[in-house]
Length: 186
Ligand code: IMP
Ligand code: MG
Image (cartoon, rainbow, N blue to C red):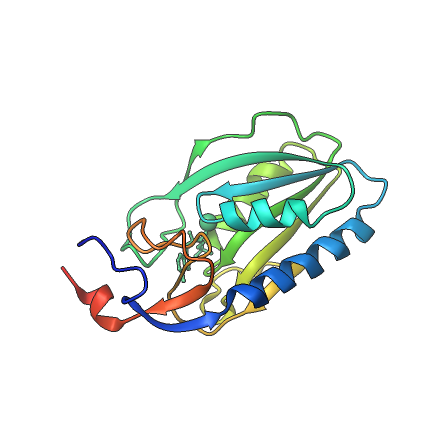
């Protein structure tokens, strides 16, 4: 992959920065009400969820602890997930008895999250819920209840606000779609 031209490679902005920020504030306010007085731990999944996690935690007004995991799916093309998940970085503290909220960038097939849910349930949290910024329902392969959802988006490969194509474009502040020639470039 060539060094990407961050602005020139964008075909369309799907969700502008202001809309993301407004939604994050809304989710933060709702979570602050719903988890009032409860021991909330936010668990986010690197690397894609990093900007969302950083913004969401600052939109929450009740005490929280945070933890980070990193997973990767085995094999598959750059724009596909295989469902086989490998844990690259595990939780650093126990979540037993805590109210846990998984903070995810995007739920596509649902395979990654399905694996994570089973893994985290095994650690006996008091509750386990999901907050996803983006939901791509058209591609779902496993049924998943998303408790807090930012935006539902059409079946397109998106980049920005943490999401990558070949590890690039994560630093864009909006969610967008790349020009077709960028995906087809060798
Ligand atoms: P799932 O297991 O198919 O739900 O895929 C989840 C992961 O695949 C996300 O956390 C992303 O890392 C990646 N992913 C899925 N769809 C997109 C996309 O449109 N753009 C960038 N990454 C994506
Ligand atoms: Mg992710």
